[in-house]
Image 1 (cartoon, one colour):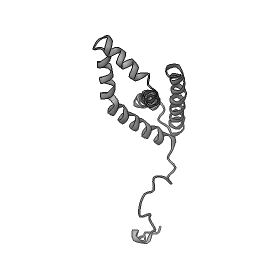
Image 2: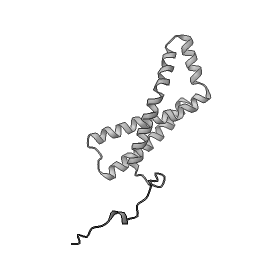
Image 3: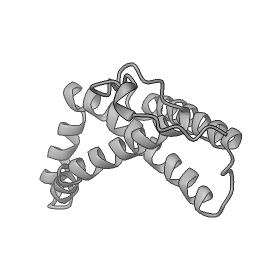
Length: 133
């Protein structure tokens, strides 16, 4: 056995971590998207609560909220919000299954992550088609 001392300074290590060049595995992508979607849902909650409160103020508030939701700008802004909500919900179910020790090995984790991303895209397109178009 060779017990020679290897000096760590002789190895060439990168000076910075380039996140663009790293190829993330699908569970990491699903996790990052889940965190981003949760952040945006959290940040958009006051807007949605205001809109809900406006719609409950009476007939004029309900009409104003309806007109606001029917504007083209808001419909375009709702597209990513719908995807964020659907992805966060489906990824949350995936993480609940992982907490129950279902799908912890590498192969099933990759499959469940890809399934989560694909299901979120498909369901988002269906919901957007049904609600907006």
